[in-house]
Length: 77
Image (tube, rainbow, N blue to C red; front, top):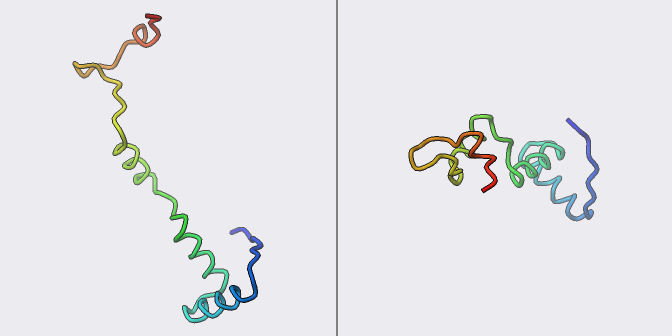
């Protein structure tokens, strides 16, 4: 874990402390969870692969389902 310095108004800090206490959390944990909700959690390797595979098609195969040869890839036509 890394320590960070966050600047906020006294009023916001007080409301955050009250909300953290109400949730039974430290202010640090409360802020960390709020940031994680905003930016999301890291993807697992499987989730990242599924997201990639669900993306737009790459169109690397020809009409017969074959990949181009090296010569075709570097053909200067």
